[in-house]
Image 1 (cartoon, rainbow, N blue to C red):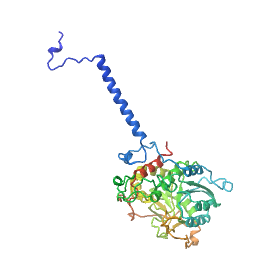
Image 2: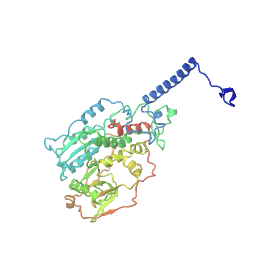
Image 3: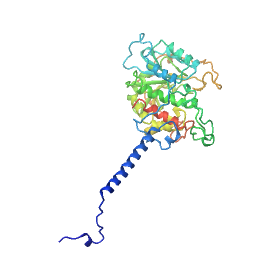
Image 4: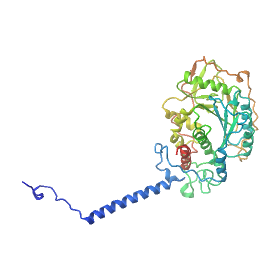
Length: 426
């Protein structure tokens, strides 16, 4: 027996939609989709160096292959990019390098009196002719350039940070005319910028510390044709690190011993974490927290660091090393040890800060004279493969939970930092 719709309780008769109604419904849906698509395009194309872009850009939201928007380059910036593509010098003197060579990267700003000392110390290092020396410049300064051009004791390649604040005189990442200064109120002054956690706006000279280190790391490991396929260790030193004659041979031995003696060691150091000491002088290898004088690690470690780009770039701290100690290394999930000898093969001698350069109003006056005693033990390998490893636990210093000294609150710096991490991964 058939049952009509009227006989079924609580059931409404079917709604019939006319052809015109279906057309209207489809038109409305299509319009909404078009508006949504246009909105997404506008949002994507609006990405620039302003605060609004970063309101929802927090750690964890940046993809590895994100679009980048580097600052518009001036003539000097473009010329430095071209110089970075030049081959190393002295290839006629040192046409080939041993397979196990350790690349040395020396990063500098504008302290020629210090650079002369470092270059002179490197010239006396046993085995220095077996490696490639890369000098990474934060800005272009002719006095610094001339010193490096005079190096003849090894292959040498210069690279120049093309987005250094020091080469942008009137635009970001340098000082823009509309930038907020000091503790300006952006709304009241109608100026650009985001203050740090202490209410201070960016100082280009200060933020360049972190920018240069991060650009250099990404460029050396992932950008330069000479090193982008280098799997071994790379040693990093600064322009005020005096290097002893035995440094390179000690470094090679420590690199060989690390996988046998210290599986929890990520790196090798030429000097103690505490730069005020020359070491313990004991008959033992030492494992401790990674220092910032003469540190060396391989590509595996670099990949772990690179994967923490957001932790590095968003942390409100203008020092790269404090950022690493208090934000990046703790995120690895286990203690980050480095292996070293009981006696330094490198020492920090500078009295002036990295960016208290020449010609500044507040320039630090130091003629670069040093009185570093090089003893006989500093001229030969003074590490034994038979030694055990002494571990330092619970060392003092910056750790997870430290909130940072500030100086790194501007959203434009965050994005530039993230762009450096992505520029060779497009």
